Length: 367
Ligand code: BMA
Image 1 (tube, rainbow, N blue to C red):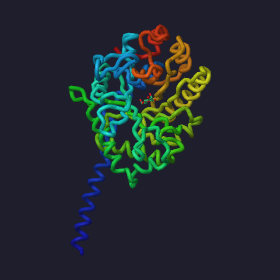
Image 2 (image 1 turned 90 degrees about the horizontal axis):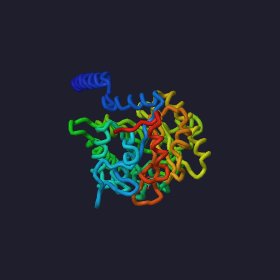
Image 3 (image 1 turned 30 degrees about the horizontal axis):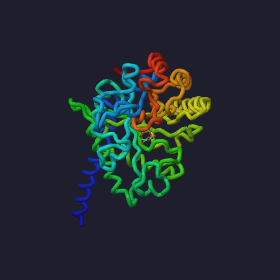
Image 4 (image 1 turned 45 degrees about the vertical axis):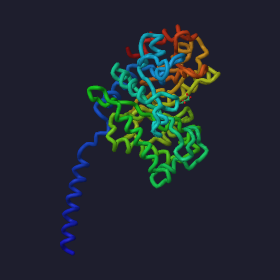
């Protein structure tokens, strides 16, 4: 008995020492490149400038696609075709990567996406990744919110937990493959579980509880950290629903996880509603960013088809006012849906105005 006790005591001491020494070493949660990226975003917003962002900018455009039959060469961009430079931020979506598919939910091959992510980094631009992932419980898409048990089913102990970890693993593998030819792990801004203050995705406000939503974030973050993905920065991006800091932070996963705080909102038919919503959300998000020492951004916006020849300088710029945000990202220019575009392209009725927007000293693009 005694011998065992001594043995256990010694083992305990060894374990304690091991744990103790582990604890005293700072845990690297952000790579040097990720820290540099965050500092750059902060400097841009501190200088009262912001990067223009466009979803899928180099994957396809209004009348072309960069993959499949008749593919345009890598690096084609509707934005560059109009103003000569690329957006400062390009967004891509990882939906269906978790299923092991070769293309995302909109048909963009992940190999093409990887090449364009590397190219955007090498030209000095920023990449943000959203994730419209399928419902892991029902097999429906991201908008299949009818089963309120979905989030619970993938948390530890849930019937789909193990399978979901496999899905997260596929995403982690792709994120780990974002490496330059010199071996630099490309820093990217990951923006999962977005627009959760609405109830149109299976992780939305009325579909899961606050505790479940936060646990979902923690599980995702811990998994990526355990995979060594310190090249990720993390964005929290509710919709326009929160009215107060308290509401904004209700489901906030934590200051140790989040780097960028933003919001998604779009213009509908009424310009005044949009300008007012932007003003309200910008005031809220910039004060939240300040209170928590984070960088603010407009993580998604736009006006579908932009049916206003002076929208860029006549609505978007005034709506932004003097708010300090690192970037403003407009949604994609679908090549296969005539009326689903939010960016600019040659021949669009707002082309001349976009060039003015580009020349405005506040906007940041990359060559
Ligand atoms: C949505 C729409 C969809 C698309 C999804 C992910 O807002 O653009 O057509 O599948 O984003 O990119």
